[in-house]
Length: 162
Image 1 (cartoon, rainbow, N blue to C red):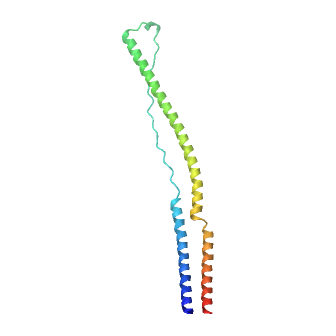
Image 2: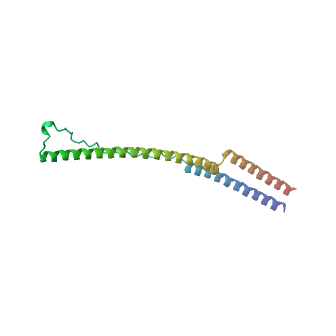
Image 3: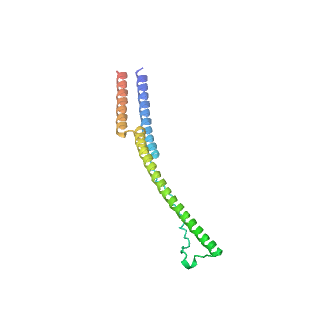
């Protein structure tokens, strides 16, 4: 009967120590998973913006007093030049507006990215703590558990012998 008690106590102790080893291995795997999950992120690349070159209009020369009387062909040419100047001014204004809008958009994107990054860092720190915990605390707990199992097993063996 004593031999059976000793064998059972010994097997029980070995199984508990094996369980402890599995817990330690699980802790190590959790820490590796946390390292992989929370690896530093690469910065996003900004796309380069390009804008068309400014449109140049023909220069406007005011008519002299001698040329106040314009022919219909001259009126047509003057109207075409004025139309081209107006079109160029509108095209250039649209490019300036696009640049201003893009600059505002870029500022807002940076602000949102900054806010998101700050919130993500708080979340990441919290998750690292939850998933990885304190290795010192876990190691100390595992050592205490191992010692407890060892002493319990030894006590069981000694009491079985007596």
